Length: 363
Image 1: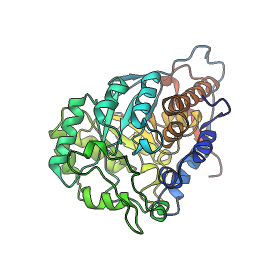
Image 2: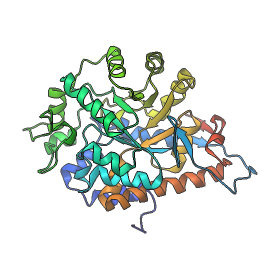
Image 3: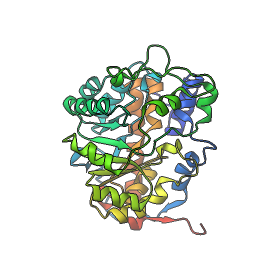
Image 4: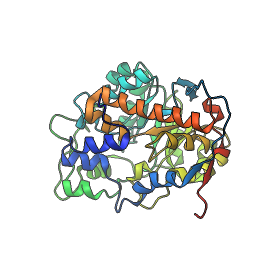
């Protein structure tokens, strides 16, 4: 426990000094000029909380349900790749922290730990994020393995037909360090991401191995090969959200991939209200991107999300203390959300309603 870390920004600053340059660049960077990366949080700062008073908030309940599963607070762990670059215990340490905090972890396809080990560490409260490979049989096997392992949902990422141009990764010729592999793809012979001259090894891997031709028909294909609920991650438009609902998905993650794909894409909190209106409660709605404060979580819930996903802060916690570091990160967010709810007149998550949040005048 780092007692001098007061917030997630402190945590990032400290982690930056603990990570190797190539690893930090991969975790921290966004696409191109990183405009969307910055806007993801800056957009939260442009929102005001018009708090209620005399609301009787001596006792507060942060718990909620997401996809029918009880969580202690509306904060889930977003899928983040290659966690063993931050800490030797990687995804398993994150999963144990989630178990302690009674919340859900979403495990990346690009995990550096076998999914069975992570499911066990998480106590079963795990979803699996899926990239669709050109090799459909390898993809089918991955989905079936996730189901057999005990994952409770499949989260299909749809905003990455190719990897965005992440210039720090190109400069650093990003690749997986020795001894670290994409564990769940080893059986298919796709576990290595090697160094490539004047290129990001991950960008080359994605271009070579992932299916850039996905369509809505492929969502149906995925639904046909699993009994698990399917969520779609990477939507920023209401019309795409409506199409997803028509497809019968269990949930949508409003996401621009943490500003790592198409630069100048909109900040997720700015498009969330229109998507929430379009969806109309017909599926679970989640949002990620730029959440760094408890007030950010409150704003996202007020504007239509059932819960938020946090990605990079997980990696900062891992880098600083493994499981304990991730637990500290989640504790910081929980305490900030609890205070924000008390000060805005919300005794429970259901009381966080749209009338609390307004755009700053003059914008």
